[in-house]
Length: 224
View 1 (cartoon, one colour):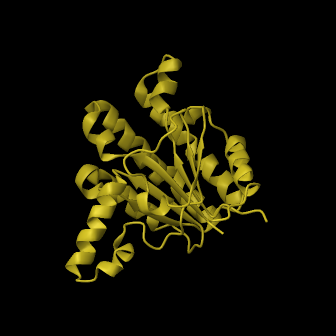
View 2 (cartoon, helix red, strand yellow):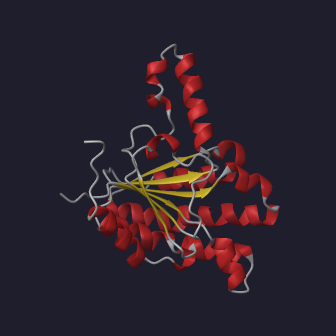
């Protein structure tokens, strides 16, 4: 029996490499990558995906890269949240969740996040944005919170991403065949992994649909 991808997680890697190959500045690669995001989300929701999660930056990205590039990484996400996310959320009736060390590493995004969430839908479709996010931070924080409650068994409830279904499929572009920074560590326990050779700005909605279809054609047994 075929399977449907309920939760798709995307690591849109390769924006800087794409820009260099085009003779452009890194910020232009980040801008082009973010321009590609809304069509990808539309394609995923059209294909039946309920939760679309994408990672836009780790703490390392925001603390180790040149300040001017970091400003662009944050800036293009702010533009997405202000201009592209509200109509997308309303079009699909989707909820918006944003997780990561926002207050610490990119507080200027708090306003755009709040304004986008003010125009979100009621679900069940959900758009999850991970910014200043490292899955190891999430796990450490959940452990601390559960221990503070004196209820270690409630660890999963304290995760930043609690309440989301497990990830069915991860798509990482940019030809890097690995995960990074504990990406969605708890939610990837049974996920399939798709590593695309294209850099994110060259990855297309058709390529995303093909990856979703390939997953659906190869059902899992989960140990049975």
